[in-house]
Length: 386
Image 1 (cartoon, rainbow, N blue to C red):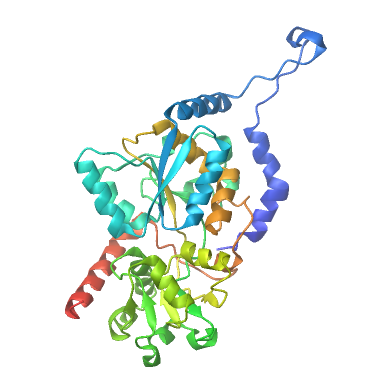
Image 2 (cartoon, one colour):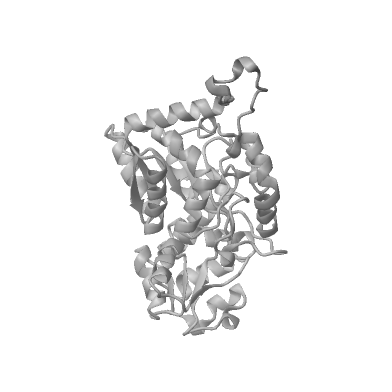
């Protein structure tokens, strides 16, 4: 896959005019009868989508609230604050969860009790589609998207249709396009050359010196799926069991363990939390390794909840977050690269590198394989009495 840099630049300086032209209402030729008083031209009629947009903004302001589920991290909240500034009168609230082990049971329990708290979600796809989709938790997103600058193929790498995560291409839309690097190192303790290939991760000298998120969750399960599909299945048990990693479920604590130098490297850390440390002037000694056999792309998706308490605000938000403005707000605050190619790359480290093939492990079509990996991990944990 191309890095996206040259294409983004091209769209920004050349192709964006085409998008703008497609989105702008067409001005009808003025006649004397259509001129306003004082000889000034009468304003051009709004395009149908603009009329719908104005009605949607008004309806969302009547509801007044919006509840968005995200992962843990202040950047998500800051992105929502930009939405609040853009649409005063609609207050967006973040409900953050560290992982699927916390949010999936909560949502299931609420719905069994007839409680519907969430409007939209910007989250990783695997658990959402594997565990919540079968319960009918999400409504189709596709019918809600109507802005021409979202539906335009030119602003998406590979076109609009390629951005859907679910097999039916209607529920889940990718909102970022990063390489999800899964191995981060503290360069005070280990140099990149010491972990130049995935086999180096299971060198006995690193035994007990690796931090890992909960192996049962996507933060580890998806990297292990990458190893599985890369023909490296034998490394899974070696990493999870034989290397005796320090398993820290709390996503902030496992980042802190790496930043503070308690371990030389980590698997499955949350980048948004790492970015918070970097903003505070810490973690400058922490870098990601580029190991395509364990890495994958892309990541978070946009979803709309069934029976959303604020449906108009949800529709407004989801049509905003996929615009250039919304994707820019998401990108700069969460510190991820936007999926739109007319938004500049903000994090070159996680941009796909030219000539390197990174597998997409977040497509619903491969979830049966993810399920096999999940069972394999459960089996090896059980065998080890963990």
